[in-house]
Length: 235
Image 1: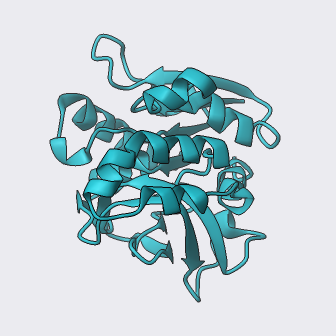
Image 2 (image 1 turned 180 degrees about the vertical axis):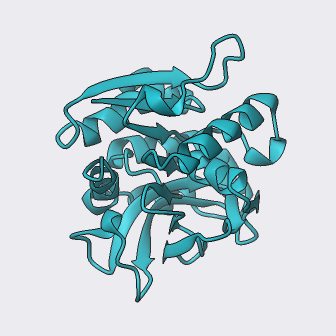
């Protein structure tokens, strides 16, 4: 059994210096469930061929400080892979930027979130009719750690909204039995989230938010992390 984490970006430099990169955080949260082979592939490198649907039993796309709205060449190439994985029903999980890239690739629309930046520990509320496996064992309202300014403002055709936040209507969605997406970061514990708030504090304060209050409210979010583990249980 093999799982490939498609790296779309780097963790904020001050946090990465202490804690490493997204791959190790995702593996930390997911390895208790998926004990197969974990591999990482940087999708930003045009000189290295992208993996194919048959190369692994599942794929995860990481977050990124890049914006899907840039429509960079590496993003368009990755979108072709997303469509391939989706068409072959290969389990695929999008985190933050990955959530947005999947949405765009499958016919949705990504734009800057009209409600503004969402960062810190935020309440996520499942839809009343949401019964998706990645919500198994979770309360209707739970906390997760977020850091994004873009949003999937129009879901792909056939997608089902699973959960929302105060600022993000499409905080979680499913496109099929195998393609699942979360706008938040299930791999962010409280320490890494506080590091992100510290790194982004000039932007946060410039936008009229209170970085100190956001920092003080950050906590570990085991329920948010459980969405990743629930995805891995589908493999």
